[in-house]
Image 1 (cartoon, rainbow, N blue to C red):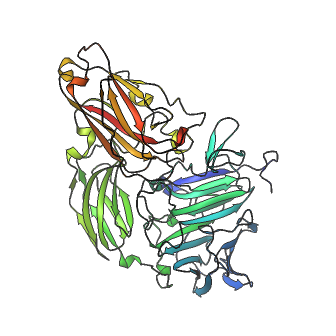
Image 2: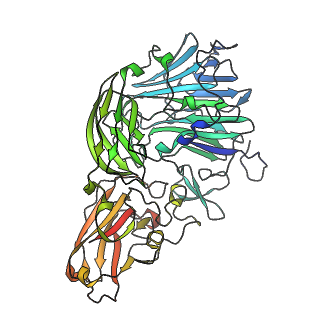
Image 3: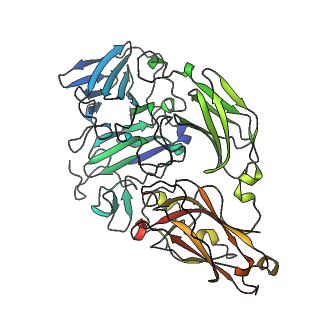
Length: 559
């Protein structure tokens, strides 16, 4: 059907499932020891392998290229829009596709060059389990897109552009007539924040339940597109490597399972979530790169000392082959990270999203590596340094700065954004909320911060620090104090080379710029304000919100 706004459609809700939603109704999912359901099986229709789970779900996989060509739930077709199927990346092309049944499991395998992809069905379940093994860079990105027919789950969420055709950036950021912006990039969520994505309404829920992302890149705080809705239909994604705003090299190997789940309107079963899902039934299916739980280990930490208890802490493990993470318990910092592939990992403790401790840990198959209490040195947390004044909180994010929350689901030009210009006065009580979360060379460079110093403070040199979370086009801050002293232009730190600030992400590589300001720069009259000017400098970028820019974590003047 047409997506025209002139045609009445049934509006249904769009849902992102947070990790905290584990208590949601379990209306679908693994059925432990399920008996074979009536109708369970598969057939060959000449062009596709047709799999019937025996529980209301029938799906087809192309024998030519491994595309998912049909997804019928209780008689309604959900798959496809614009003549396109659901598949890895934008489709693999000619592939070798096979099928086999092992008891109550059917496995469809797809081989395309060095890439292997799998669909599995279990008798009596309305789920499709997927694995993807990418061995090298011969396929440009690693994503699975489930394409959903138009008119089934229309919505008007931030990632929807059903009712607008006016693009304001590239071909994927749109402006509505009321000045609000929409894009498939505006997911609002970090990887750590969700277990599933999808839509529900009218007695049907359609979801992708994400995998543990052990072969993805970017860590727990990575943001990427999760879903979209437009006039021709909707898309749900499992993004493992997208090549946008990436902070790590791509990892290769088997990723999964991630699950397409159909329900009778409720959330997918928590038994499908990456933290709880077990697949012993897949151990002997011959999936390339598959490592059963018996071949994995666990890391457990007694606790973390030296924490700022007002902040959440996360512990991450990463090497060139895999990544994992877990939350530290608020009361004592205890953490447990299960199902880790054997190997040696860099262990990082994050205060919010700011790394405050790194170490090394080795994991062995079938064993738990137990760590004694980790102590975060006081000097590793910038908040512990004595400051004359501080704007923001050193937590690795621009949280609480002006427009910070909005920027995870809107373009900077959005009508809901407060003015990006305006100066800041220390002692006003609005220092953080008045300071813009992002600074651009062509938008609000030259921002002024006014502050007073005591006579003793003005008689000494001080260090000024500016923490950033990412940068676009090598944007970095240069400072001037009282129009009498200007810092050197700092070297740009390593940051992702793609769009970030305009596509809903402040996540890059946290970096702190330090400036040694001599005593001669300060005003000696204590009744006068000192004036700090912050300019964004770079020889790259274009204009407006695509000029060189940076995202702010915190700013302080040390005592």
